[in-house]
Length: 95
Image (cartoon, rainbow, N blue to C red; front, top):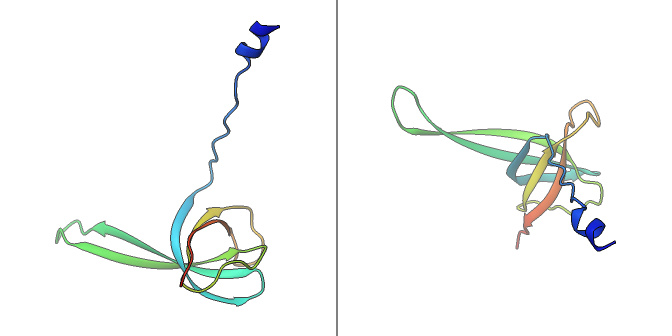
């Protein structure tokens, strides 16, 4: 019996969905927030860092998120016409 307990393997499922870190810029819709994600990359010719901003609509089932919160959003199935992301966790609450 003791050998069976030691031979059990824990299964760790790794998600294949993309995750992005961003800041909430709007929470006026019901169960939806707008998350701004800033991506920085080095310009290939000028070798300077350039910032690109994209806004994603994400699903917030419990309406816990508010403007200024830092969140992690995760890619999911289409929820509506524009929502393809959902809020995975709130990393930092706004003051």
